[in-house]
Length: 162
Length: 121
Image: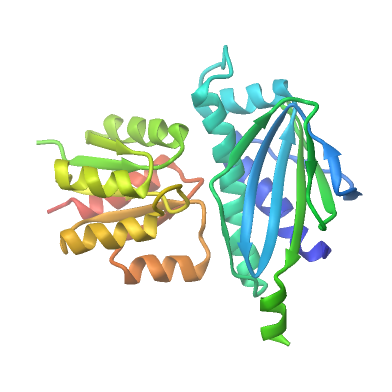
């Protein structure tokens, strides 16, 4: 997996969070992750299709999810209900959507699928043949937020470019 | 009389957020659709003054719904409201008849300005 696919997601996450959460997250060290890994408590899964394809998973703890949802809704989240889940999913959707504009400017035109939320800390996710790269973000006063990017160039697109 | 808006977004959070912005600014929310197919159906029933339309949605996406609504009513005012701001998407939407294109996340003022401009008449 190419590192150049990761940059747009980190960049988009920072700009979306600045606007939606009113705070600037700090980027941590990029690392690789095996194809099978255990998820965090709350995970937003976004499918990417087009010239690069695969999955992007945004992972966080329940506490972080509560704090993000509270900030987005503008009122404290007492129980993590449908509205809170939808806010978290929308944050993932906005980061993915904004990343697509950055990927398109590098020549990769892609589309995203509606986000899916996976709750539960012992879920194993397998990204098939695509290893993931992980960007950890530290959101001040909110918590850690992890972006798992596993994308690869589509075979047919790669051939038509060559 | 308050202008009537149909909100289309698969995310409950976005529908609630848009509804708050619209009602606080004197608009009436005529209905809420959670996908493109619902938007087309509600457009026929409600005949709203304007539609806000997300793009990435299950069942029928926002571009397909925009085309169907414009086929039903060539004067339909549809404003895209989506996280995807890449150029080809904007061009496709505008060519299909969208009146404006708002990229999420947005400031409430951006939505209000777009609506005021389109519904001024």
